[in-house]
Image (cartoon, rainbow, N blue to C red; front, side, top):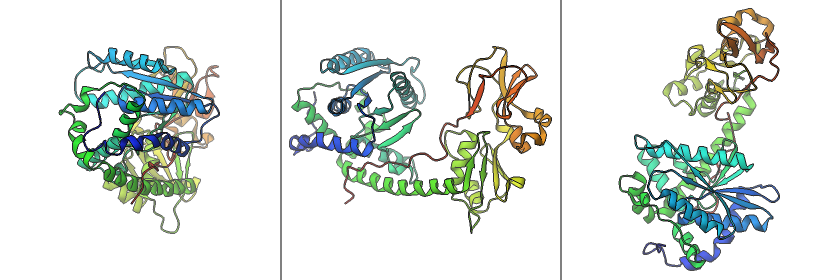
Length: 432
């Protein structure tokens, strides 16, 4: 074990006594939870995640529940497998079930940290789904928040990014919770030392080649101030996102065929740029919203235009508003039918079909359906259809099937919802 850095240890032993109460309060803010809650906890073996696992275990047991510790072995260091096994044994000694998730194929190369993070969260989400767990806890603490804020500031992040990490985020099928965001790491170490708990020290945490490691010393000197700054930005972001969600709810209808109807915002006729960006992102199935001067111009003066893979058209017979539809040239190419396929980053395929079939846009075949479909031609041409070679097999959204394939379905499922839960800042820090 490594003692707290000089200067951090002052008062930590006494403050650590309040950590259990602070954790319980944080979990209360991040609820609600089901009776006898099942919590997944991401455990690296370091002091932060070990403290989190023990705190979460006690909290869950008090409520008739339990936790499942998920230990990710990235396989990037020779000692990682041994460290994962040691961490699993330490948890098992305290009656905590643990599972090691081994990642493969990372290897050296560009954007390693980004690839490792994506692989880690994909593995954690899959393990949660397998275990039937809705909640995933991570051990991010106050210094992590300070470092994140510094990194984003250096990267010229806007006000959204400067809100730092959220205390609660929806990650695919699980709720990602960070109940320790307001806690200094020295307190977590002192809490573990008081209980005689060991942890693993990852040498990559002090590797000067990593930006986060280089920022650790200056971030530690101002972690409270930086975390408070993130909290202020987070509160402002939450208010802004609630206003955006209210505008979307009042003026936008997202259709299962993958397009949107936008009613004019009275009396100005304008849209919030963030609201318009959210619609574009959903209709395009894009991982990020568009950020451009063209977006600002279009929000201030709505008009027929093409932007970021979508088209803005007058609604015509649908009313006085606008249609947001997929741009035909941006639609994904044909893809073989397979369970779980996400075609065009927007339509999830379920059901079974012969291997020779594929999914592609309806395209020119939309002419055979015409007005009887009740949809604009711009929407019809981009609908997902099932093909066998050049033969049209099915258009699920039009209830058209040339063959009996009743279990085949294509559901509109963009990667990010048009409006989800607003940003949740850490509520455990004072704003003074």
